Length: 471
Image (cartoon, rainbow, N blue to C red; front, side, top):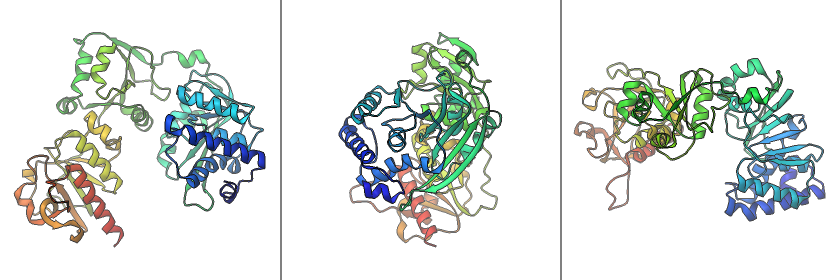
């Protein structure tokens, strides 16, 4: 551990090294029970967890008291406290098993000047701090709004991010313009490793928001108690593709997805939907949104994934039409005919991952904004370049299509054109006969009839991307 830490430019004395080693042993001992980290290789734990937590102290001046927001198993707060014992550290964590783990670590390591905040942090938390540091995945704008009640004027918010966070910085620009100043954007690399990092720092320009003002409802509240309520009827229709298309709206489920959509597209967010009044709109939620408070039974009817988290009602953009007779843009245009919304969402996610810039939803396709499609796409449907296309039968015969079929040429021997459409068959009916002439196949073990449509398409997209990189 001393060698690995030293390679990262971090100098620990014997006491500090013993404390970090003890922390490591506790993390390993309780990880299986509490699911504390996804990193288990020893060298990666030292470099990507402990050294990564300490390096911000070498990149910028850390304020004190400093809150570690969303501390989890104690990072970056505990390694920072070991390295900088002069800092006053507050570990903010809401999950009881991890709270208990953090308390045990602080007692075992005999650390002073560090405490656990046993709650989630929202705008109504008003215990003042001079700084906040976080390595959580929440969007920057959401965190800036979250600490409005506790961060003092001139206080710092320090984000430990990966190298590609420009979209988050842009999304936070409006909020930052009035309340925060972006003071530092420091790209760096964990020494002697390929891991690139970015430290993004904001300074507070305004005073803390009083707790009573932060907790006061900022949104119009509508209490819905009957299945006959017209608003509830419309919401329930958004669980099916037909209702989504007719109303031009969708339901977004899942805490992270809801937060991401509000942070990046606040203007399209219409309502915050909860079971009762216990989960008020996030601090980042724009004031024009309504707060729909449903009875538990009505909310359960909409909460199809059983997350129990607030649901977002979202106004959809109108998808541009794709003209199959117009000259085709260079690269791969993905044609989607899938009727299972989970397949639609999964393949959109793969298409975005492999750099497909045009995704065409054929008329046969399930709605990409069906709740199951949104969830399967991990929210990619909100940023992907989607187009509305014609039916399979209306595709021109001279369209440069590379299709997927078991009878085709093995895909590893296929040559991908510079400009083409990739088409897989529908679930069940498969590929229309006229496209079999230029089909490619994914080799499978004998006795296996076919692959899932979304999986097969994802493999083909990977092969296209690999061949493109190979030139």
